[in-house]
Length: 230
Ligand code: DC
Image (cartoon, rainbow, N blue to C red; front, side):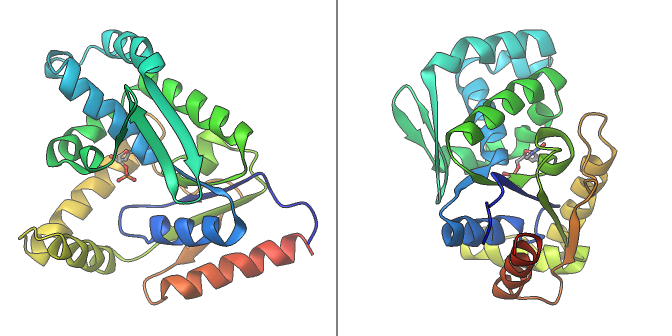
């Protein structure tokens, strides 16, 4: 195989299977797994912990200034298992999936100044090692020149079923109808937001994963990689 691309982007909505497949692909290629959502989650967690009042009345400039000032205390490392984030030397993990972080992250991710800050960090990390970059705007905004881009999708019902099973495995009690309702609401919000809405990036290969197992999606990505770089 000729030179491999430095960045492979995988975008798509919640429940499309992009995280699972991105993880498998990164492991297979020995690339870093750049989970861009983790960065927004980490910013949200730090804000909630250190300056929750800034979120009450989102003043973008103050939030951005606050986060920039925290950067020396945050450290990021890119591994095949994912983006590791440390705050004051301590690794963040469960904090990033905390329900409060979860419920506020989309507000933080909607702020253009915060996105600009995140995008700079994401591009910097890819200079350190090749990566599979996974998120909502990897192929459209952050790495528009990536030579290989994928967009995973699946029907709302299938995505809701996956999320429902995931949440149930984590012990959360919620009905499948409720998950479907939330997925539809978030789709609408993600696709219609002003800043970096969820779109199919130009040149992206679209894969509908509704009836595919993760291994089959991985296989089709690997075939594409081999076809483009024989
Ligand atoms: O993929 P995730 O669930 O960890 O994403 C968390 C939040 O961050 C979600 O509200 C979407 C947002 N996000 C984004 O706006 N842009 C990205 N590239 C990745 C995530």
